[in-house]
Image (cartoon, rainbow, N blue to C red; front, side):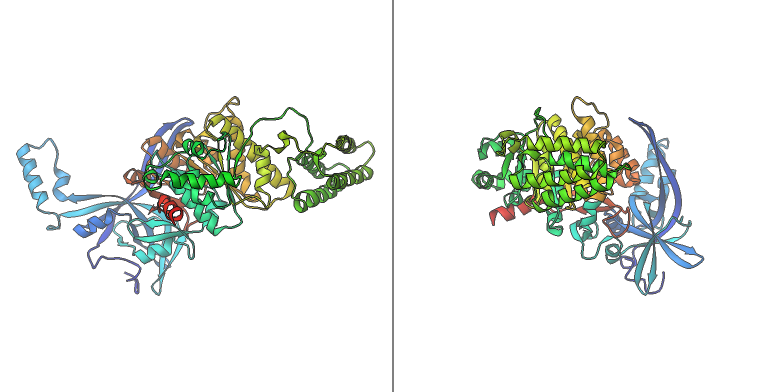
Length: 592
């Protein structure tokens, strides 16, 4: 062992002794919807001296360091334990073909030998993290590496403190306690938002509970972040009821008629909360939302009435600005003047019909457009388009009053609202009908990306898609809007980061999701997934060892396998964690 390395390793008071016996490649193949998928992963087999305390310790998540000699000295290759098997020498020669009397004799010998004989040991399977560790004055330093360990090399158990230094981000946000180490796993929550995240687990695993907790962490750490949740199952209004009741907004395609009881009846209530919170207390929270007009009807009706909006005008000028023909500089100047005055300074909605501007703003807009028409060529197509728009504006005939249609909240208006200073930090959109949910989300994302590209809106937006299999299925049609939602969500995941538009996905059916979209996620939480092909999709999409995913079948509710390329201190290292119970936070905040 390297000098001054006693604090780096945990030898369990001399009980842990191990060497590498074998290093092999395991291959698995399965047939998926897109064809056969073959996964290959490296596995190290360690032979560990048998000890009951060591055996019990290795049942918990553990990291081991395999010693490796290099031309520059000794380094340590970090592996994560994936499976173990207590072994006795006589087990290797025992077979069901042996007579019963001999088998019983073998079994009696084996039973009395555990911990008493050198013929017993523990076979430990471990998978590479593709990181190495070097020790400098008792301080571990880590780096990515693809070295292969050498048979016969010594192996050591990493200490709790070394694991903390390996994975935890200094001054990061706590997302749970690491199983096997009882230390908080701290991550860069901004990276968790910026680079997209997925939460995957079977029904009852606690996906909405975890996602709600993570939303709380993000809101606390990133005050300027705007969050919008598309909720099909009606879970988040309850999971975030205490936050929602504090100046945040709820939108729904359903009409509750101002009745708090109707609202609560539409939402999913966790059994533990139902027994802990009285109906009176819940109704008080919801009534407050109605009294303050923070529950609003969302309309998905597409108007047949032709109109020209500020958003349409921005798009027209934006296209002309990017063109190479004459008039491009003039269009750029007009676009900047328009967005600075009407969107930035006056904070108008991009869905506003230009005829329904007040007198001052209408005259200001006409002045901008007249200046543009006078500065471009007389035969220019842009001049004709802008002249037609000016005629449209001046034909308003004094129609300055908002119509009922113009005042309705639509997905497009919601996108504009979310980018405005008056939007609260948390917004929940309840759309129980899957077709309506897909239509709403696709229209919202389309308008949001358009506004960010054209008006340069720099506000950070996080879009949470619960039941993601409804929005990005692997098979799509136009009739149910799955084709539109698939395209827009994939565009959000591919392009959103550079426009500060981010996405979290939550789903229980990985095999039915758009794999191209999944591959854009840089962090993910995985709980129990009973179906083999769901686990294969995770392993294939995120280059994760299937051996580690197998361990998720033993997780309890609230326990997760967390892996991140960005949010942890090291890339793509699996960590098993116990996350806080979001329901405890609700109870504490509502009862206090």
